[in-house]
Image 1 (cartoon, rainbow, N blue to C red):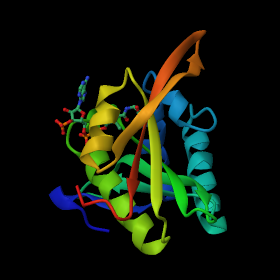
Image 2 (image 1 turned 135 degrees about the horizontal axis):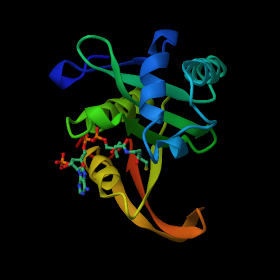
Image 3 (image 1 turned 180 degrees about the horizontal axis):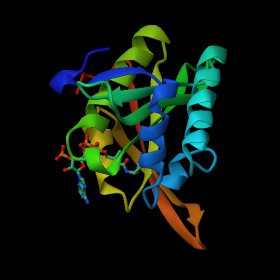
Image 4 (image 1 turned 90 degrees about the horizontal axis):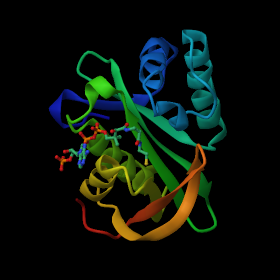
Amino acid sequence: MRLPGGLSLRPWEMSDAPAVREAFAEPGMERQADAPVVTVSDAGQWVGRRQEQWSRGAAFAFAVADATGTALGGVAVSDLDPRHATGWVSYWTGSAARGRGAATLGCRALADWCFAELELFRLELGHRTDNPASCRVALASGFVAEGLQRRKLVYDGIRYDVETHARLATDPAP
Ligand SMILES: CC(C)(COP(=O)(O)OP(=O)(O)OC[C@H]1O[C@@H](n2cnc3c(N)ncnc32)[C@H](O)[C@@H]1OP(=O)(O)O)[C@@H](O)C(=O)NCCC(=O)NCCS
């Protein structure tokens, strides 16, 4: 899928492993991965799990790539509930790629794809309230803030509030 600014959205490929390893090496990024990603081999396994989830229809993770095809980050929909046509959206970008709209453009395109291809009705996401950049991405991608989950997450003994957002298939395009 072509995005503005020469970006594109595509499924993860094994050749993305070095870029994935580099992104997850950044402090704080380890929480975005489902298992530690330290080596390029770990990153290859991370890509392999994304491909396996895609093949089962359990989750759909895309790389947001630049004009050269290099992965700048990822957007994904998971926790699909076909009964209610809902899904959970997440996103991240490597630190060198931030502030260029990659997460926002990727998230908007992912939402459009989820409504058109998966026929989902409601997409949900949540971010810690001390993550204003993630809130900006959510709002700019058409995800309306819905509420506060008090002290939902605990990291290193500290509990964090989470703000939830959702975008409906019937919401206006951002
Ligand atoms: C959150 C994250 C995905 C944003 O990625 P990105 O590629 O920089 O996103 P974009 O460039 O599309 O948009 C970032 C927005 O946040 C804003 N922003 C960045 N840092 C900010 C800060 N400290 N305070 C307020 N706004 C901030 C930018 O100005 C921009 O908003 P704008 O378009 O209105 O100017 C990225 O920082 C990241 O991967 N962080 C670590 C993982 C993470 O937190 N993922 C989300 C979990 S809920």
